[in-house]
Length: 71
Image 1 (cartoon, one colour):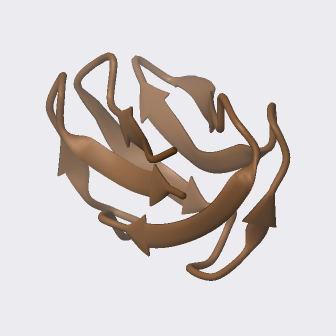
Image 2 (spheres, helix red, strand yellow):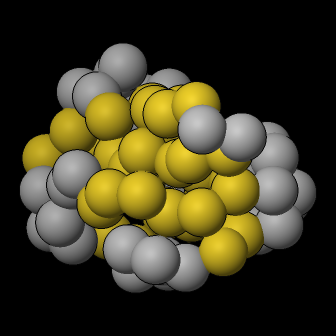
């Protein structure tokens, strides 16, 4: 099953925590977003391998933008 992780808010990508190819468990942090001086961890909802990372540190994302894909 493929899980697309998308941004829920407009934010800056503050830190990329997981690299492509990393095995993730449900609840693992993939990236940390920053919005209005708040740090918002983005978590994997299911276990799997991080097959695609669609953002880099410093990127600005809009609501609905693809952040990562977990397979």
